[in-house]
Length: 227
Image (cartoon, rainbow, N blue to C red):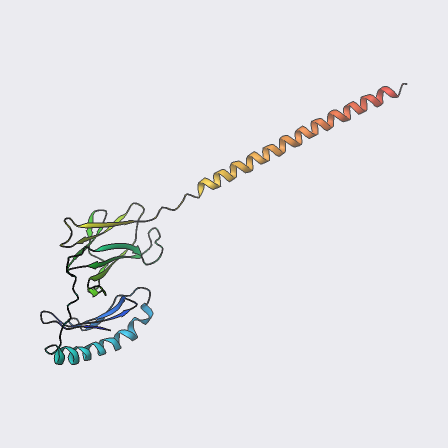
């Protein structure tokens, strides 16, 4: 559990597992926001209990101890540009609904602007964005996702703007091209045809040779009869 008490903004309470954010309390909307993929079956029962605990933590920790707490400054001394990784939740298929994730990590200061594009056009529908969560080195990370049905020629991009970047950085993703199965089928068909023709030629050649030997034997026997 991570608790953030700030004089300049609202309290933050979030839950992490092995350094990855699972969920956080959104006190403005009065609910838990679930950010972990592939755990939807656990979302409802854990979310309800977590939000109650988060509210209690907000009252007890931030209200009573913020004025007395001493903050240890672990912020990086220098600005740090984000690293980006775009990947699907599971193997993407043509025309099938899938979720793309854009993981933006280890940047400082903790202020970025994220945009999804599809073939150069901005996409807003099906987009989610987690809140910022701290890393052990004092930097921050954030996760955004896009729900989309990719087509053959689609190029999906995650664009990130940060004060350390002169220009926005785009990380692109496209549907992987699967190898054409017709090539091996054609080669196999040609091979079978060539093999069949070879066998037929061999049989015909063998029959001609056998017919020739039988003819010679018959002629030899025919000439011996008068003798």
